[in-house]
Length: 183
Image 1 (cartoon, helix red, strand yellow):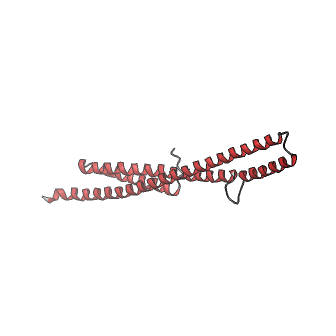
Image 2 (tube, one colour):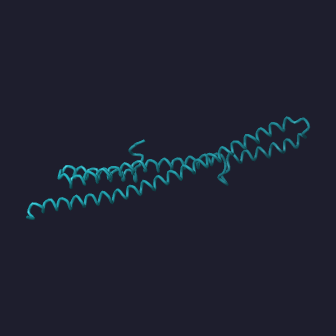
Image 3 (spheres, rainbow, N blue to C red):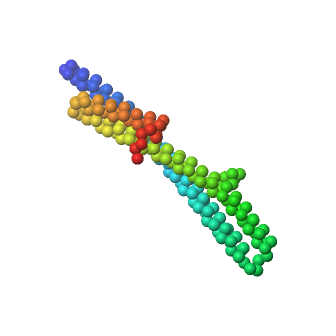
């Protein structure tokens, strides 16, 4: 009696092992995707904050420039006082434009914001690869499970092939996220 069932049992054990491995990689892919998504969101917030600070500096500098032009036109102002005030404001505006010591000048803020954007873009590229890898694992699990029910061996091979594709997508996301442009 066991002669006919032994081959099926062995095949089912192999498929169960394949499903387990695919599920393991699926969990890894989902964890990597969530981490990349969190990194992308954090870098996007950082970039937005830096650009807002950059805009605030620009507005403040414009207000000071306008005030210095206006004070120069005041007929009752003493020329020495006007000159002194305009020079102070000019120094302040120059500091707001570039302040390497504090890193809060517009030039430094723009550079920081661009770095945060690059970090965001890298995390998003990784995220998309991880998500595609996870989808491949999920479909592979479904196909491998279908082999157990139908006995169609090709479904198990297709599930295994999708597992290989999923691992490749995780590797691309991890090591070369810009190698394949998805979005």
